[in-house]
Length: 282
Image 1 (tube, one colour):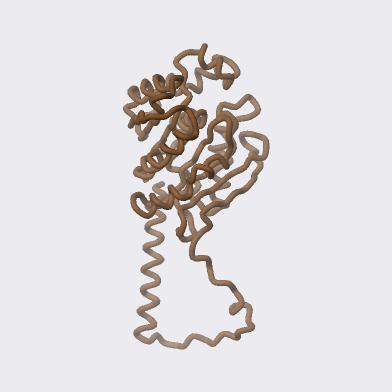
Image 2: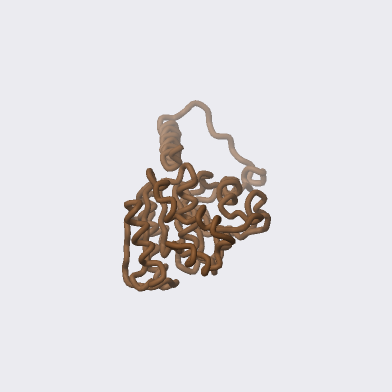
């Protein structure tokens, strides 16, 4: 289902409905509006909000994936009316959590995009550990089974159209995109990709070789067809620049190799372009 198109049609229908009501007033419709007692319940009702809060945080129990409570952060562009808008998932690096994205100024980035470039969309970030998990902790299952209900509860489109990630979160974003119907675009910033088991084992992210082989995006490049893929990696990121370029070449991704390392300074610089990339696929 094309959520962005549905949202635009709904807004157009609301606008046409408002115009019809205005025309009725100008031409003098039959009947008069009844007077409202200033002490009545209707008179005391607050008018509906004209814009949704740009940042909302929540804490939920992940019953289908992680079997623990997780923090969730929802970020909308400022000035957007309440109601469902498209959603891009955001996956944090290993040494971080859902709130990581707030310190990068993600709300301001979304507002600028909505104002000058793409249609408005929201970011949903959630605690996911190292995005690989264990037998009893499955962050990818959390994204597919728990997240839709959380999005609906917060009045957002329940089926994300894109996913973006940083570091280990970028690896997780690539895995989520290749395995999930409905994901049209994925942006991987400094993805932790490993060309061999000896490097993956040293990272401490995987329980065994079989888990790495199942999760390593470099071993599943044929599964990215039909999705727009963007890869960003700092030119000074000695550990992951080579594998990032290798992956981007195999899947015919948009690749960007600007100066920078595997750190927050580079991620802060790369995020605006990565968000613009996914926003272009609404």
